[in-house]
Amino acid sequence: MTEPTYRDLDQVIHGRVRLALMAFLSTARESDFLELCDVLEVTRGNLSVQLRTLEEAGYVAVEKGYRGRRPHTAVAITPAGDAALHRYRQALLQLLGGGGA
Image 1 (cartoon, rainbow, N blue to C red):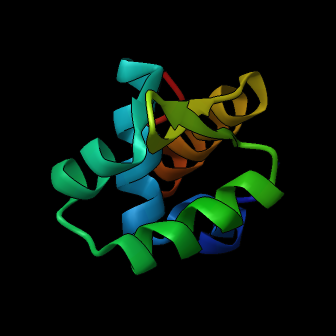
Image 2: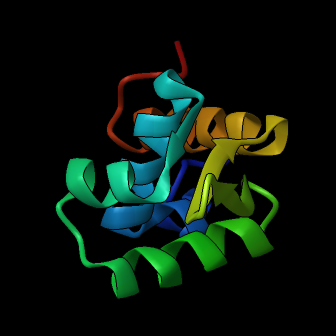
């Protein structure tokens, strides 16, 4: 088996905002757009770009609708996102010499 390298890290997750977003959703399971902006301390524009990247990879599901008369965007981690985050964690641990436990 070859030694793990930084190339084993999933580039979709590796961005710091996307990593924080995935980590948050891995426990929260679902959140709304404005809560994510607050928790991650990012602008709406930045969050939109990061969510688009994760959505295109199939790691999150974004559902737009309304609550009453107000627009509402719900974001949830997908099973593929859970699996990708697990693989990312394992690869990072391997790279850092911590094994895959």
